[in-house]
Length: 227
Image (cartoon, rainbow, N blue to C red; front, top):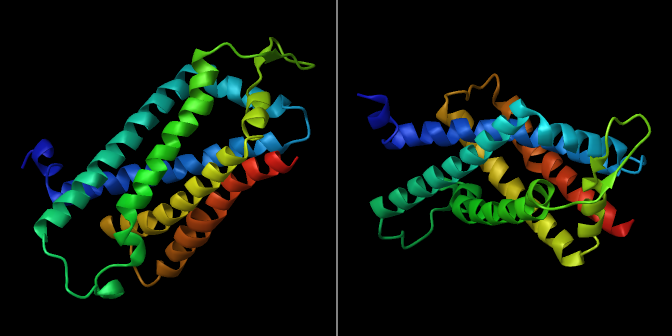
């Protein structure tokens, strides 16, 4: 079977969803570490320098565009799998079997994924789009070679808006549910489940990706709002 044919099968699509999902898991860790610099008490020097590096480094930009493609690919294939699974069982059970066949998280993946995709689009418009495609105020810091776009000030101005802060918190709730099931599902797809490692994988999936990371992202706009 050709690779193109394999990835058009249900198993092939699950592997693609799992692989792209694990890649995105690694991205959120790096992204959170960078965003935490918004809370430094340095008038934005560290965060603006970080944003300038990420925004102008050719390799980083290549990866960033690849990341956007991966997000779209992940969402598209995941929706394909959801619709094909529903089409294969057009008549719902008279009684919902609950976790006898699937967890509550798995049954909400399409909804949570859609919420998350909408959130990502809004996030890109508010920050990535303005950083790259609009005129922004700049700021010069001691020791900096040239003025830096003041994404720090834009972030603080944006998160003065209470409804946007609420939207970010809701988006992180969607991220939490999505990561809890997604990480576990990806591990199952790649056959990583084993009684020796299931405890560790469960800890990583629930406490790191499902709780710590979403809370970390949500804390940033909340702290900025109440500052």
